[in-house]
Length: 186
Image (cartoon, rainbow, N blue to C red):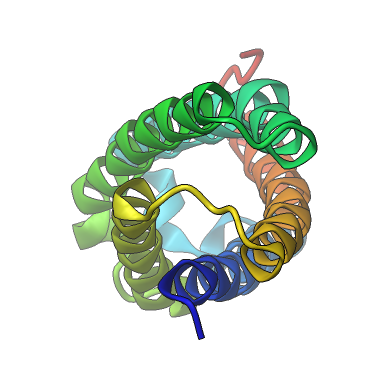
């Protein structure tokens, strides 16, 4: 199996696992809304709410940017696999690495308050795995064989599903924050 195909398959698997982790975050937030603040006492702390709001802002930026720039750049490359289009994909991957680093930093800043929640360990591990996978994608040679192009197409479909899942989890997070007096109009 070509290394490029393996990297793309690993990236797709990481994306699918992140869907599950962010789904757990969304479930936690919905349960907290249903059960009231006492269900998750850590939300009473204003600093945690503000950190979660920062996470929400970053997730919004990530999903919008990926839908507007990254996904279309990969589709452009798939339809016209030239070096210039691949360079654009790699530029978008670099930007994604920076955004994921910001998400990891926000999770790190909230670790004392939310580390005991069921989703936290999985989410951090998956974000780190995603970060590692993105770095591997940056180092990978330009896909060119039919199997590499097919793997890239499969990856972008799974990645689009991840973005939709992130939007749903982020909507739950925004609703949760608004119910606790945080303005989320970002």
